[in-house]
Length: 218
Image 1 (cartoon, rainbow, N blue to C red):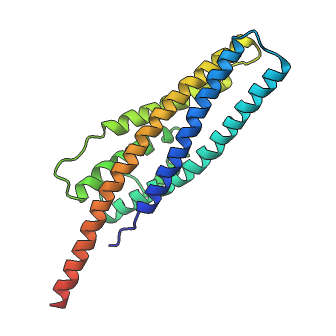
Image 2 (image 1 turned 120 degrees about the vertical axis):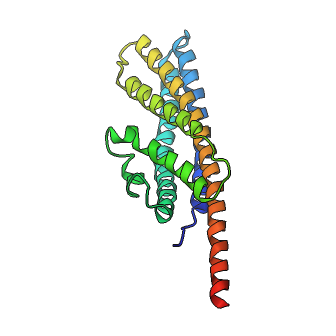
Image 3 (image 1 turned 90 degrees about the vertical axis):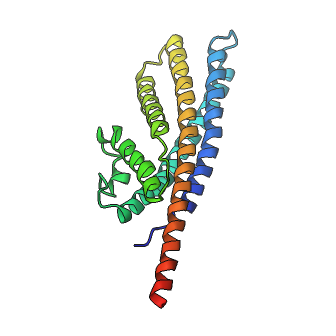
């Protein structure tokens, strides 16, 4: 059995998440500016064009970073689950579901949450932690993630052919910005904690390998 080091992937996705957080803050500020703009008396073609350009830039940045973050997070997520499969034959799901579970409709509402709980709990158990940390943090993160997804889908389908319609959608997107930012902060904490558990597990396996080698050499 040889666990695969997951620390570099953890560092990479955490750094991407930090940059993503700044973009979300920028989006919130941009949406807030749009809301004030829509409620002002200074709506001209020039100011409307400037507002639309700013919004388009942040929407584009958010989309690109979301795709990048999703790819690198799933790489980290799948390796963490792969390592558990090397240690434990009672793992609930196939290792490939750490990737595909995010993409299959309806299954993606629950499966990634279930896998994350397994990674969180079983990595601690195999690292011989005396006190296993609760999965409450993961539950809050997943609730925010699903809530954000629902509100985003609803907001993107609302009509925007009137000023009031644009205002409503803008407010809803500000709500999603807040929910997404908090969810992002929580997943950063979760990845950092799991990385600590994996580090302890990796060191324990390395120490056992050295001891076995010494015994074999006697």
